[in-house]
Amino acid sequence: MGIEYVGYSGGEPLLHRDFSEVIRLGRVFGFKQHVTTNATIVTKEKAEAMAESCQGVGVSIDGIGPVFEEIRRTPWRNVERGLNVLIDAGVPVSLAS
Image (cartoon, rainbow, N blue to C red; front, side, top):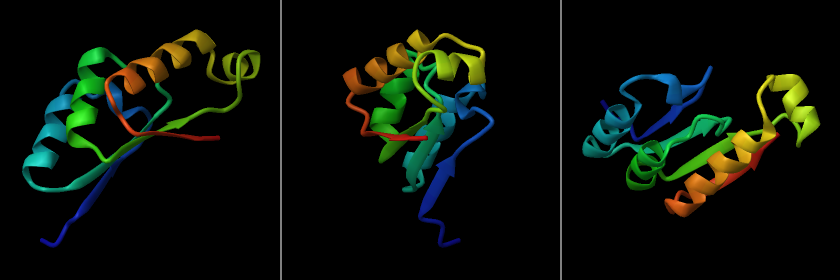
């Protein structure tokens, strides 16, 4: 079909119950893949799957600390934790706001 690139964005793509399998299959089909997430629900398993299957992950942030918490209604520490999990897994991470 000529598809070379697949981008996953949201909502929040990591909420999909088969997320790791979806990106694994994308790799099998030879797609270049990129995920955009807010990093609040990144797990070690999903980070490792992204490291193996994706060319990069963009983390969208709406602010830092209290600003983020006000907008997203979730603790900023969840983003910091998610970023660290991604980096520890060797995922190429970029930030966008």
